Length: 307
Image 1 (cartoon, rainbow, N blue to C red):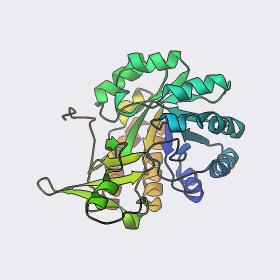
Image 2: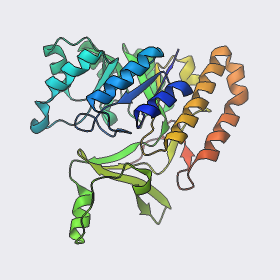
Image 3: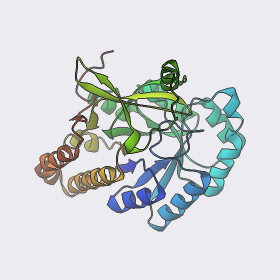
């Protein structure tokens, strides 16, 4: 059965997502993970893990930051603590995580997550041979490419099915530099809904969410990906995990969307015909929940990536 996993903002939000039908959540802290919906200390991760265990759900931790020398030495202590907590999986992109995993003889499954470079099954299998049990594919792939990777991959395959996608990251604090140039000070904080910042493209009418954190500057897609009405081929192919991205979304929105995807997967499990009968209704419900400046589309599932 395909897993639904979501990125929560708080412990209470994780609980609500489990109740809404999520099979797993992805948590972490920005010192070790990229573009997290919420900041989860080891203590918070322990609480989420305890909660998940009681309801037979899973907790994965993002350790997919771009590690420089000043931070890589902290990996061992952090991963030893994750081992103590017995989290259900660790996302990584940097081989330093893989090497640390080996050095401490960790038993936690590793999920390869290298953002834009997870684009073919050869590379997925390369990391599989080195210990990864899952590959989280690039968001720029088409439906056909995803299905071909799944057919030839020796590891589990995870894809994003909903939410915004990162278009750009710089290690530099570009927002801070811009405000400093203007003679202003900027608080490095923008995860609260009241302080979201948008880059406005007047020519196209697009608004790109942008924020700055410990890992630099991040710019996101102007639309939210949504393929709730295009899941059948993916389910037929037994894609292992669907991710709903909760970054910069309200908790209420993410819970509602999770419920709808749960409904879609349960309907398909009963019969594909049942899913086909309700998929347009599910899509309409999501459309009605979108912010006016955040239309939905199908990402790159049915169009070529053009840069």
